Amino acid sequence: MSTTEDTKRPGRRQQDPEGTRRNIIEVASNEFALNGLAGARIDEIAEKTRASKRMIYYYFGDKEGLYVSALENAYRVVREGEAELDIESLPPLEGLRRLVGFTFDHHSEHEDFIRMVMIENIHSGRYMERSPALRAVNEAAIARIGSIYTKGVADGVFRDGLDPLEIHWQISALCFFNVSNRATFSHLFGRDMGSAQNQATLRQNAIDMVFRYLAKPEYI
Image (cartoon, rainbow, N blue to C red; front, side, top):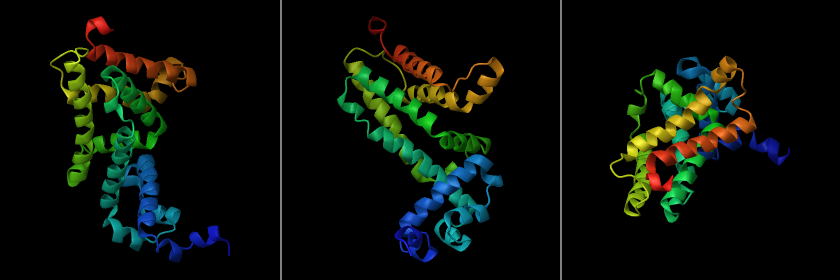
């Protein structure tokens, strides 16, 4: 038996509980993104992960517990990516540009994340309330923006009196809409908004819009 075949056997997978847990979350995230919380099936997730339903329930309690863990993971991935940018060492204007560009790229490359957030909004965010970790992970994002903004104000390049949470909202809105409404815009207006050329333009527009919102007029 080959090593590859052997690692696919349930007995071997159980020897790596963290790997099994990650695999279940990855598969479940795709199922929730495609079918929503109500439409996703534990049987289907178990089949695709080669894990038993009993194992899934052992790790996550129930389907809702698995859904909350998938939400936590989705947000954790984007925040870990932001942390790797090291934007704090850059001049504020350059750090801002890099952060917006990263957010645009991440959302474009992780459509399941966008769908998961849309689904949770359909549920009025009530499942997020079960996870203190989600708030802690995302508060770090606001702190990072606050650090860039405070530095920019001190350097005299950013307008004073802005709210880091609202800055985060504007960045998210521009980058989120690019994925959530791409298909409908493309059909309604007869332009492929997902083409490489249009994506490059929209990415630069998002960076420029946030830049102009924060920067003092003399720096625009």
